[in-house]
Length: 525
Image 1 (cartoon, rainbow, N blue to C red):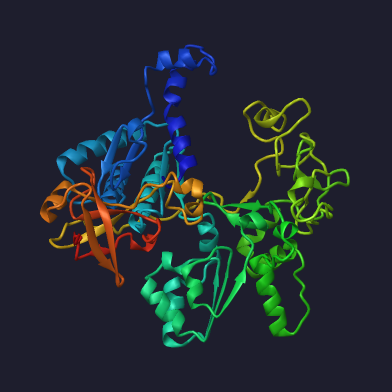
Image 2 (tube, rainbow, N blue to C red):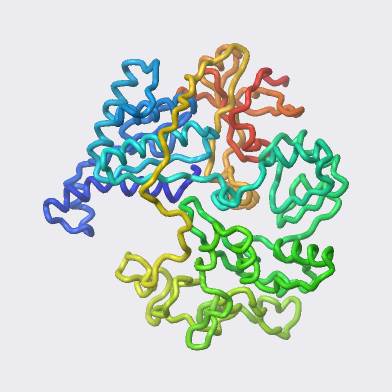
């Protein structure tokens, strides 16, 4: 629920066992019925750890449902079993040790073991445990891979950029060290205590918010600037692979409403800075920003190669954003005026806001706005852009990796967390995520909202019995000065002493993960 594409890839990879068995009998990959018959549901082993059930449990060889500390301890124990120079874990019971032996045997015998972890559990120890397992396997000569799922699309880029934390920034506002704050495309209430954020912003003489969505932070703002969203602007993000990926503007809002005053965030900020410095605006296109970023932060030197610059042409032509079959362009603004204006001019990228331009499938480019080839329509046209049917793009994947594996490596992480201990009268919030609902932007879509579950609070049956509540009963708790009331759902998989909340859904900020509640009670009717 936090990495849907990765989950799909895992599901497909697990089925590779049946394909291997079929290949040994010289059965072609396209003979699906024969492969299923030969495989008889055989799968590569998948081991999952989580606070509760997952959508991959149906294909997992074993699922370990436990608090995050115990998940980390399992990882540290596996690493030690693979390499006895890794830190040992005390207090492992015999049943769990038997499972560890099975996992170690499977990993040691794997051709290409893969470790998947990430930041959504809210635990650095879980990430460290995953790194230890990967290091232990590497030490045994395994062709091991490790994948980290980041919380947001550009989390890796922000980490590479460095700088202070949100806590540092709030601290400066609280002490008066800073007299102005710019909140750039961010809802701070999702990442820190709303009470603390509001109190800190109230002390600032100037609060400026630049955003493309309305957030509660704007209630504290002295100045709000309307920024272009990802669909209305161009830029670069660093994904969880460490790959710099360029995103491109889909449309110009001013073309459909000439009263719109909406700029990319960097254009707003550069204009303000140039005005303050009393100098000419010299960032007139995205390429100028990229050059400035590279000069200030050399670790991002590779982003210049993530996509061609604005001067890129094929046979003297820009690349067409729209296919030749595009229709309705004249009618789009007919309610405004029957006179069709000139199409917007894109000075930031190599694309044109029209169907006029190059769209050859064989052209030397990786940036493909649509799949079309003569005689081939829609998805069937993709084979004209690939080196073989279902293969890679002829001219490589778009983007460029900024982080590559090296021969050197980290030492083993040695801080093994203590096992989780439930405490009477206290409950620790365990994070639950939903593909439809946890994401900050998609949850605003009416279509996504129709697929979102209603907010809930999960309880272990033992905790529910202590509180005297059943499934569907509404319970309340207080946090950060607010009272939250939610219906109960009972889960056998959730460990006692914890409550599960759907992170990121309206009213349930991700910052709640790991917080402790002390006043959980049945709500008054």
